[in-house]
Length: 123
Image (cartoon, rainbow, N blue to C red; front, side, top):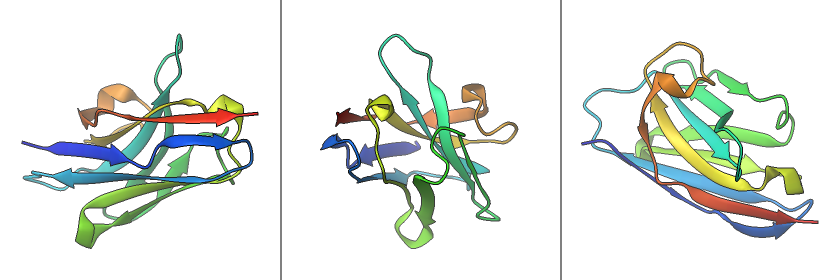
């Protein structure tokens, strides 16, 4: 059974940085892409970034371009999200997910999800 376990969340001041990690285990096949999503209270879950496993091509939400970087370490079966220049509006629960294909930012294209890690940015 596929398991995704996030870590690295925490509380930082605006302008600070965090690096989220998501370790995967139990794959029978390599997913088409790995993504990071976030969900703030009262809001829908939104795509933050994704990386295609075969090409390493990446996609980002406009709100995080230039500040966040997604990457993978295949030897460790881990996907990372480096977050720099954090803003209070980045406060949310962050989830990693493994996707099968299609639009990277659509939650229905992901069939495995982690439990989430909280990121809180204070002004």
